[in-house]
Length: 103
Image (cartoon, rainbow, N blue to C red; front, side, top):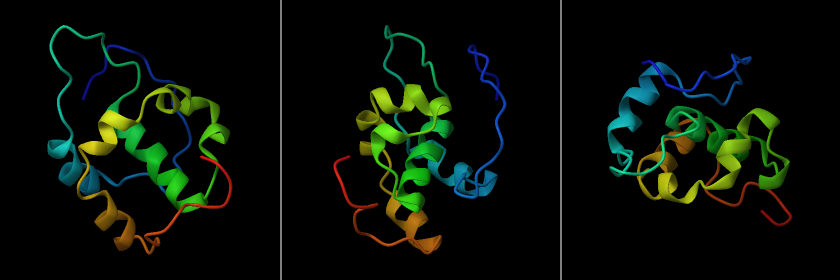
């Protein structure tokens, strides 16, 4: 897939989605509404950032710098991911809070 915005290549994290997982989740994510601004961050990277937080228990404001766009507005994407708990459970992650402290 080609993105209008050039994303700086980064090292893959163990929490990143596999291509197979992304193939399952991608159709469930709502398409951007017409007339809006172009996305600054690919949707797969947003899901990767959410999984990173779930797996590592990091505070939301302590996200890695490359995920800065993800920190600004994750809610619309989260509402479109009904299978995310199953993906997390399949990875051996709990259903509770990612960690202590404010998000």
